[in-house]
Length: 379
Image (cartoon, rainbow, N blue to C red; front, side, top):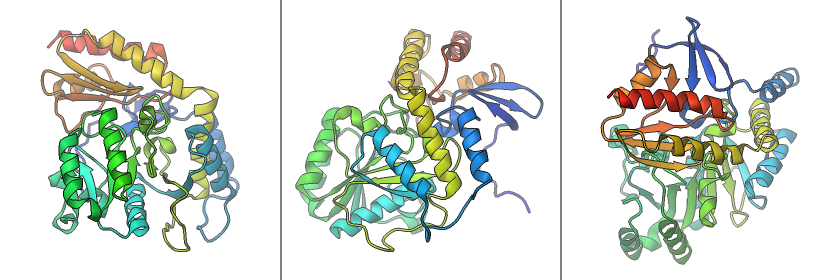
């Protein structure tokens, strides 16, 4: 049997990782400035993270949600305190797409409506409803397409108001990323988010904040939308939540009524996943990683802002989009193969996406800054 060939792969085989570095099977060392799409939030193999997972392996790794699991309660309490959403409830699942699926379903259960509003440039996942609110026709199969899903232009208040004027009574939820990641680090304006919240309240529409990539301290706030003083009805999270261990979460305002069987999952909130997520929160709190994300993000931006070929820098914390005056693939490949630094791209071919671990150190950022300067000066 062969693997189903859906991923374009770099010819690199990492076999070891520590902190912000990877080593391949040839012993070459790489700086990780991408974290596998913002997944590695506290660095590879953090000692506390490793210890907690190893100790849990000696106890119990998994049982289903038909039994009590005190680790789920501990995770919910710590997540509530660090995020500031202590009055919300938590549903645990396995991924960002699954979190968004459950959020959309819960919204529809709540108000009995069917339509969903999403935005240009969005990415919410590859499963049924999540891919239907993802702005990429290449990955939306015919079975996923439905006129219930309505697209509005990013940061376009006039169009948003027009859609609500016509269809507000039919819209169940609005789903929006705190910051668009795949879309190229696109940041919503405070006016745009404020208007969305206002229209949602007026028309009994559920506001879902997708913080799968922009959450967990990535933006310099626990969730990116919190900078704007907006209150979300439902918040979804995943990538940085488990530092590589698959876990997702749906944070739900108390006004949503739970009932047996309303939502469900086999693997979500299992013992190992909870321990991984608790360890991440412990490290984030003990090492002040949200503050570090702000400081290191600002440091990187100040150092690179005058480099040649950079048109704009879109950034919140350590969620950074560097827009070049050309396709970024040449720069990305040079950073990877000539300087051994992992970075990312986006649907905007000119945008180099930077998503290092939240505990990145100044000397590690300097390696990236020096390499980027050299690559851009040689173009």
